[in-house]
Amino acid sequence: MKIIVFIEQIVSTQVKLQGVDYFDSTRVSEDDLVINPSSKNALEGALKLKDQLGAEVTAVCVRGLKTNKALREAIAMGCTDAIEIADETIYTYDPLLLAKVYVEALGKIGEFDLVFLGVEEQSTGSYAIGAMLSEKLGLPSVLYAEELEVIDSGYKIGHVLEGGRKIVAMPSKGVISCSDSQYFTPRYTSMRGILTAKRAEIPKWTAADLGLSSSVVGEEATSLIEVSFSNIVLEKESYIIKEGEPEEKVENLLAKLKEDEIKLGA
Amino acid sequence: MVKTLVFGQIREDIVEENTLGVLNKLTEISGISEIIVALFGHQIKDEWITELGKHGASRVVSVKAPELEVYLSRPYVKAMLEVIEKTEPMLVIAAGTVYGEDLIPRLAVHHGVSCAQRINDISIVGDDLHFHTPVRDDQAMKVTRIEGTIKFATSRAGAFFVNENPAGGSPNVESFDVTFSEEDMLVKHIEIKKAERTVNLKDAKIIVAGGRGVGGKEQFQIIRELAEILGGEIGATRACTDVHWIEETYEIGQTGQSVSPDLYIAAGISGAPQHVSGIKAKTLIAINTDEGAAIFNFADYGIVGDLHVILPILKQKLQG
Image (cartoon, rainbow over all chains, first blue to last red; front, side):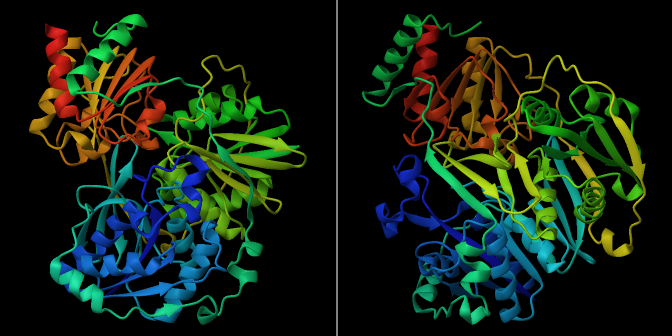
């Protein structure tokens, strides 16, 4: 059994870069780059099946500034191996172009049973890749999965639904996107995993290796054109207390609420 | 003039409120010439059509089939593609629910274009549409347009208000049949586990809510105690209800309850759009250790600090 996990790397949302500065790659250091939290949920989903069924799990990363770092972490978590697709010509802001790259990557990899992805890329809130990929592959899919159980015919999967959870059955070959749920809570890297990751040889593919040119997956090919990108100026005046001992902070808050005639309590 | 097709979503036997929000938004934009709603199901109820008309739909195109009883990607994509072919819209839009976000990108793939995701505004510029998507925890705004004659988008949940006094009329109704094969039904519906909603938070005036930062089931006690002192209710994010730190009835947000209290105290809540889209509070107070947490963008007042230290002090002062 072979599982492919497509992961993304983002700038940690803990990094104190506000607004558009956050997306300025010249302002971030390698330490700021982390696996997209949602992608980690996908890795966990695949690794649970590796533990349970002995699946082979390959992590693939296309989107990110130092994709090699993300893939070593994926191996340290327990992935069997990894493939880096590093090519500046690929315009990764368009989920459709990213889906095209994923389809060709899967073609080059060959046989596989399941594809796992995170539900969304958390810095931009982009979620379309899972649906687009499964549609392009023509494979059954379940998105927003929260729990997964192996059954005779494939998988029984619970996914997020407004007001509850929906349970469906999916055949054994398909695409699954994973939510931040208890079941998909990512494991930590292990010492042994870190050592394996250090030694691992990670093949590096370019768009050309996948038979793709910039006219197919480059910015010139996108149908999603950026018109503008700007900071949101908050109209709201917030009173945020950062300094002082805890007791002072609470007193400060209560005094300000009193001054503004905000009543605490019924 | 922009002809628009909206994916009509029904939840718990009524038209889903974000869908009504999208309709309301579209009726406010001059230049939108026609609002068509696609409605699928095993049964199509007259009251849904009436409701959609009241909120601005001028035409409802329905497909009735047992395979469409609950949302499943393939049959819904198939039916929707046929409606698109018949109605030839310039914009196809769905409210950003789990189903809307599943459907729209798939339709876009079939038309060879990308899609705009989680928009909170649309504008007509010349002959084209501009889509506004807030990113990076609502700190930046990305405006995009889509090349080609047909554009696909989902709204962000909670972005558009439902018109409380809609003044629309009755829409033209047409229906047609779509046939489905076994290939369309590879993913099978088993059941929907409705979250128990034993506590109604909709009318609560004061809510003290906890997020992942609370850290555990026992640690929720301080949230409960503070709520009791303030005479309010407790609330939580899905992250907390999923791990059973607290009963699922208390979930607030896109997949939980929508609330509009006078006072909302958010403790250990990061401020993910899925959670804050469910809150319309007069006053929001946030307590979080992470100064960069998105919740502070929505807060009127806040303390950067550990809720396990801050809340006991607050409790003591309020009692004292």
